Image (cartoon, rainbow, N blue to C red; front, side, top):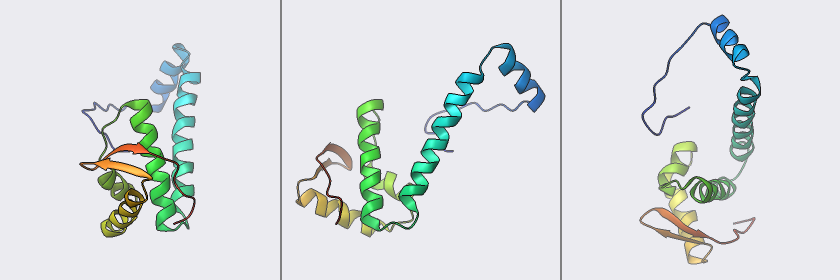
Amino acid sequence: MMARSNVVVRSIKKDEFHRMIGEKDLWPALSNVLSWYICVMVKRDNVLVARNAYSVVREFLLEIHELITVHKRDINIYDYIQEYTNLARSTIIKILSDLKKGQYIVVEKGKLVSLNTLPERY
């Protein structure tokens, strides 16, 4: 995990954790959080394993678009894609440049402004 804002982390013993979760009936909420993390990890594995560079960039653009739309996040797409992949910055820049030329995406100052339907293949 990576924190993107100030975070306070505290550890407690497993028995204490189980007691607190049980007393406050938080098992359903904990299950939802864990399910979300599992879905994120599965998606990342599907995106990153045995895929070509364009497919990876495409999936991350769709993810960034969702983060911007749903969570109102301000994300530099170049940095975000490079942070979570092993792709060279030049590869990312080339693919994004081609997508801009094809008018599939609009990027201003590294931020995704709009996203049209992306082609399946590069």
